[in-house]
Image (cartoon, rainbow, N blue to C red; front, side, top):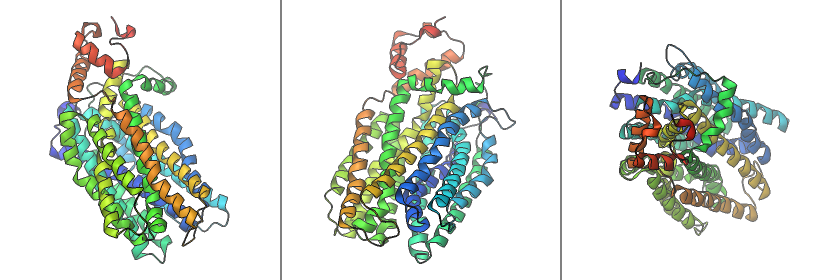
Length: 484
């Protein structure tokens, strides 16, 4: 069904948002526990464990943007995007379950090979689902506030999923099955494999696509793939994706080091679930407030606010002594949630605006390609961070399967946990100051895009529109190739 046949009401908004229950939780579990699982349960050396994720991204570097092009060109009775939601239901369960199965290979390289292949399979399924899903919001509506509502629902389910993913797996592994972590992680894979498969039935049934603007693509698939680099000629998208990279780099390294921090630096492994849970709860609770503010002042400015809060909290963590009260650690974790909420949510909410500016710049509707490169970036960021984290663990002398670590290793863990994310967030904050899209500039851009779609000549745009579009695009509007 096309956009004109559907209404973005509460039911449709919730159906769409439910899809990111998978996106919000699956990689959080990987980010917080996968390295710990590989080093402490499977017994992989830290450098090899970090390389498991990195090697998987070599395939992602091809599959993510390629699948964006494939999604843009797909033709089926269910549309370009939604057909993949049906195809991915069973593979989600199978690949996530086998990611957490423990096999007792004697060789380090045999372990490395299995978990690398398992990770590649999971990432492929993730791509097949999330690239079309992230494209769908752009096509369900062109209204700024309705898109914000869809983004809010998406991030609401994402944060709710993150809350579950940040508490239940830790409780299963560290409490229920603390004497049998292999079984604990297997149950995590089984339970969450099922939980991540179910939402796609709801998303498929409750959403639609805008087929009224679909055009025949005369480019070959290889030509479309080669032209992906032109996405980065878009000033809005370049700033947007840099904000995203540095925010998620900070989140990934903090998430990966969190359990090591509370276990070895603070010596309080039992509060890991409480700390992570308090951070995720505050991310979820403040989400509606941040989106309400974003509708008034813009998503870029809200990102800046969140980054500023996060920088301050991480600076406090630098001076927290190892014998600090448990309640202080829980409160500081909650404050991290206050800061991380907008810098995690806003980059995904900005995605439709980047797609619109790209269409205005190049003349093609490439929401799948934009989504594909964005999804690739998300997974590449986490891969590189976990790989570097593995190298850092090795560099500070971390010993796998050991109940305690040396004094030097403990100091190194504290530095990794606090200083590394602080640097990333500070860079993201500076970049966010130049993000050009606001509710006002978006309205002008969207009006011009609708006019051009209806057959209007870009040369006929008024001076105010030209100025705004040029600022968003990073090029003079209209370009020479757009003049008629």
